[in-house]
Image 1: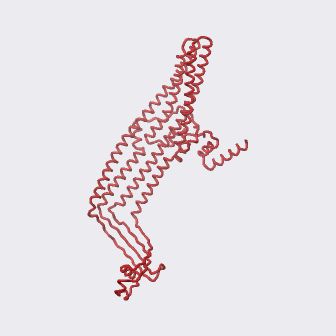
Image 2: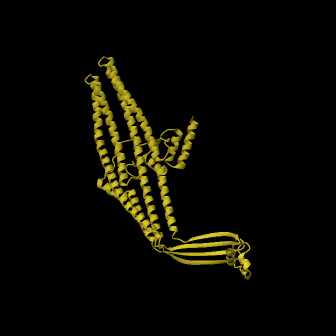
Image 3: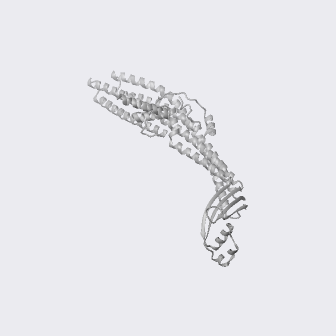
Length: 464
């Protein structure tokens, strides 16, 4: 037994050296089937590495970077190479191939040779190139549009990170709350059992009727049900934390922190709204999308302008695959293109891009209004939770004192079982309300930072 324990310890030590500080705890939990100890900072770090939503957003940024490179490629010349082998007796083909191979002779002017030539083979090696010298700045604007789209995906990745951090904070504190609720349920079970014992003693003494004892039994059964629910809620909260982190729900984590009041920085509503307008990544994304759409309008306008292209080619024609015995030629030139009529397609495209620009502008206004509302809602939620903590803290002491007095009065026969159970319910409810207020305060603060666009792994609500 000791040798097995030593082996597991040695294996865990090797994993720590290989995988760092966070993942070994995960592996240890999988080996021992016990919840792994985890700080909030570790949970956030793991989530930013493992969460599949972030991986998807990161893939979008990589795709946007590739789109920029693709757009830039149209500014450079394009060069092609081809090697072809042909064989045939088409008169025009044979005549032209002999000329290209520089093997045309006077005998080839004979009418029977021109009309019914023998099969002729040709090996052609070609290099060709084209270069868009000018397209009314359409290609440059396409590059600018791709860069703005890249900026938008970068801002979306930043916003995704903030949302992931918030979900981890919310689920982490959810585990802390579920743990406190389990403690309250266990304490309520003990209190209900004490009330049942009191009522039983008084029933056996003939001081109270049997209904008191039955009421106490019902209350104890209710508390048992609440205890079972609290145990399951804790298991579900741990599963939510694992999901938020992007790891398997089979891996359970046990937070090292405890749910307690913390002093977090305060900010005014006006400051929060200004921060949101300046810092929110999703608003930055909308602005980048607006700039990208402006470039799309300019690209549609560029389609009405002229295009200047340069082209060049070199070709070698030989009777065999091995170079020699043939000829070569080259050709180069510049062309100017101007579309005179396309059935109104370009004007329709321009109208569409302008309509999309109007839609993006309207969407930006809607996003700004929604952000301001989110900030106000989050601010008021934090403020309410802060005040509720103060009220609930005072209520706990009052409810506990009321329960103590009612227990003494019941033992003395001065109050009924109904009064005692009401006091017990008030004491339980006061503790539950207090811990829920503490939970809402911390998660509400994180939500306010999320609404303001400032939530990050170094935020006060994340760091101790």
